[in-house]
Image (tube, rainbow, N blue to C red):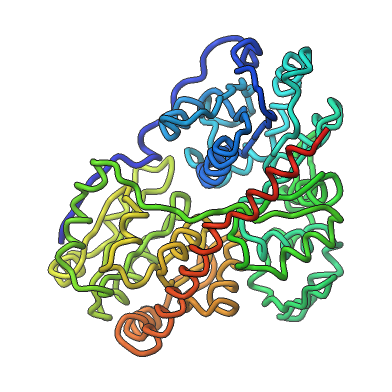
Length: 493
């Protein structure tokens, strides 16, 4: 088995926050001859990615973009946006009790600490408003709008204070955005009952969810993420309530035409315009990635012969989960690339969970990677046939963009709804397990992979995936969602 070590984002570390100024000096903001928009994502790589993509799309259409985040995130984002005209604005995050210093992205934090970052994100409101006050001193610099993350609901009050429209950006898809908005803005007692099926009937949507597909926090009315324990703390209910009631418009990180009924739902439930602003994701051409050992290995494989296994940057398998999955993969006799990441803050090497028997048995047909991988390059490679994923939304978009069907194991939050979209509505996948603490059946994994990789069932999914890829490519050429939003911005007072 080929082992490849690469610098994981989680292991590179984040730069230490520095400087005493709570906001970037306004005189460093470029004078905008066009409309100026402010973008403010939640502090997580999965949120930075769509915000950066949208920022570049807006700049290419003549808008000026100020991209706000915490100081510890700016240098990393600048390295991801080399050659871009994005103006990054560093805000100093006041200390958060029990949060490690200079850890200002949920990707660098444990699940519990990531929740704490979300709950306490309102501490950025003061430096944000101080920065706004400075740029508002000159009318030519007044932002046309603030595009803020769904998970930064307190920005609605800041925007209102300065008379700036707040546009909400959902970094998940429209089905996830719609159903989660419904679930988190209605009384829990009206949604959760003793039954196993939850019926959602509102405006133009008619959907049934299994109880297991509802975020677990909704099953406890005392969940810290649902209610604000301390004054000012952010809650999930507040985030979705603000997105529904206090937005000037809504943006969703999905492709035009992929989920049209849910666009209509968001328009009807908010009474405001909605645009789908994702566009086709292209493979990176960086030399380092092109020389990656896993890509060279893929070059030696037959077309549509390899399973790619990855559960994102924040989903970590236990020893029992890893062993069960490995038994199923080995028994399926399929070729694979499996990227394994270690739990944040632990001294565990997750590769140690794999038995010597597994490594020996699969050494001629598998690649095990400990850490980072060039995911877009893998998904765009002709040898890749299926993607085993946790159904994080960015991963789904990358898979769909490249015409790759999926084997899904949703674990948290919107991933259950994303899995329902992939398997039931789009017909692009099959599910093997459900829940972050569930242990998959090795037999189910084995049989599912055999069906996906070596039968007509999988071939039909691949054909559907290629068809949707072509539709997306045509839609992305038009970019009507982005163009529509730009027109909206240009017409703002």
